[in-house]
Length: 97
Image 1 (tube, one colour):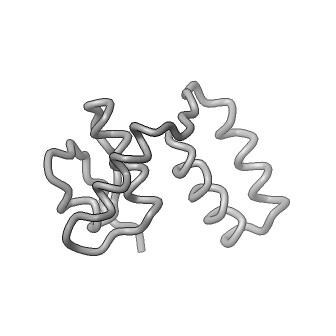
Image 2 (cartoon, rainbow, N blue to C red; image 1 turned 90 degrees about the vertical axis):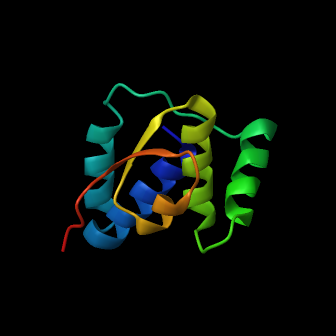
């Protein structure tokens, strides 16, 4: 799991639930079987290429999508920004209102 996904999940939970409740949810998530991936030069360069593509996308989305591309993995998301990235394999989730 990209470090940026972990950061985004954390800040969203803090905003929606408050710090104490967010920490309770995060303690459950942290028990899930995943490998946390941190930056390296190859990944950094790929994220920069994704950010430089035409269209608007966040820095975080650029990091997340670039790791999926580097690993030839499918990215599960609900963010329309990610739909326009060439060669990105995706599983689109429905939007939640």
